Image (cartoon, rainbow, N blue to C red; front, top):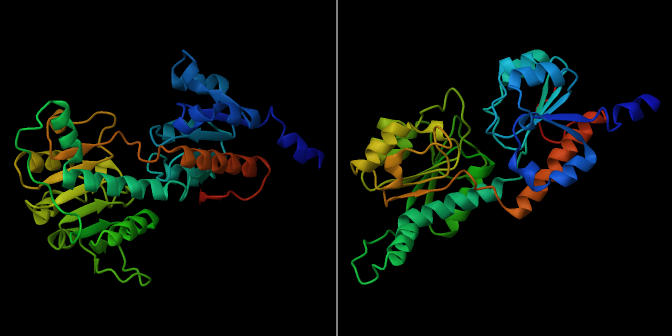
Length: 326
């Protein structure tokens, strides 16, 4: 019992943060009541020097999707045993290196599923009905001018790329609007009745809209390329709420500028926070700053889950939402 109490004492419950996740900033007081955070971003030292000087005994690291946890970073943390991310995706973490070093990894699992599905549908409605463009129109005093026609959502053939928990919730919402749903994934899911396309190009050929919901991996990098966008066609729309690099962004911009697809709703970008300048000028594109999960409810749930994973780790209990648990 004494050893267990010693391990969970506040002095040993140290958690390293390189850059503060937004959920940490929102609930910092509550987090700091439970753990001692080593805040690298507050130091004037370069990251490598800070880690070499102050983080040699750190066992846990807390990050967001905007902080890359590379093999080089991990090599400077010889006692690290846990990485907790405030995101669902883990493409910013070198999982192979974590596995090699025996470092556990936990994410936020399905905390943000509904929020991401909501923003996907919101972006689609916005770009089809030209809501953001109409807002600019009214603010510019152009009420009496001719405004271009939008598009009906009901009846649209929507292809969902990646029918995981988020993709399924997007499908559920769009079915309620009368959309015809199909999907692309590596394997057909026997539990759903939607038509399955193993090839994203075939999905695009049979869709009016593509909604990107899959994880970023070596296999999905630039999966939405020139061929897929050409198959989607001049009347087609694309919504991306996954990761920017799943889409060949340069090709997407070219297709939008040249009218080879009709429009896009983009929550994510290839080189965040940098957005191609040309996208800022297009009225057939709706842009969102990768903030689709920013709701009070989900930030609270995320705080509780992240804290729960840290508590479980420091108490030698199983992680609540393990990605790697070895």
